[in-house]
Length: 329
Image (cartoon, rainbow, N blue to C red; front, side, top):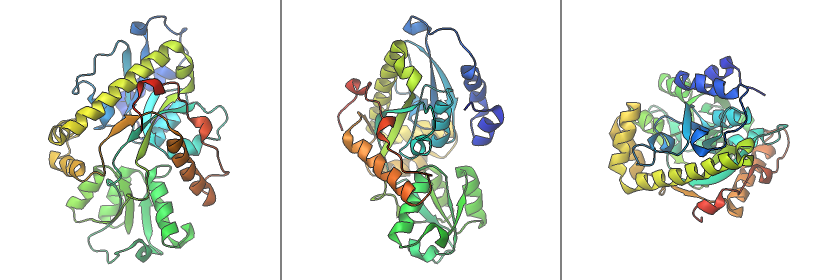
């Protein structure tokens, strides 16, 4: 399945990155024989780790980088599977939704341990809800095929409710914020600095994802890139730089808040509060049986709820060929 121009635009791919992704999908000559001639097609989120290689002092790569900006990990997984990307980050959830697709190209190559306190259930300031169970019959916004989707599923389970006991509303983060602030939804399961933006307007956190999410976020690569020895070398180098950016972030929260603010226009104090409230530092680590088991538990939960057509085995999604350059869990 190739992604059409209309699909990529509708899915939230930044216009600036569109031409590079579409060009990457077109037929190309045989792979170059030198690292310096190679182009690694990478995904970024605006304001996340992937965009700060230069600021962290690791931006001078021995290969070229073609960067494309996406609005979410579910879109990155689709783009990798479509042959449009070599590497990108996401949560545990997006690969589950394409695991059973014929010819699936997504392979998980590393685990990014990160914050779960910035993934929350929000209630508007005028809501009388104090627990999730109070939202029975209410409109609850979430982002499909993401951690938001899984958190909602687990909250229903904890409260003894089913999917049919609420009015779930699948929305992009941007549309969700508009719906939440205008009263279009009664609660919202959402993630990232947008949580802090909503809190500025009086939103209340009813529950964080601590105790629900593992804190494992994933870096996935395309199988053809891993099978190419030269690209595999570039991918290993890229992951090493990615790990050093994580260390750079952990070292100075105020600096991290400042550079993210400069990149996104969102006030630095919101990023700093997110940093100060995080559940733990960010670390890029190697694949482990525990990480695979964690994702399998998530996949089983989606299958049990009937949100994926059949139960899937996630182990074939994982590829440990880049493990040697990564830290232990």
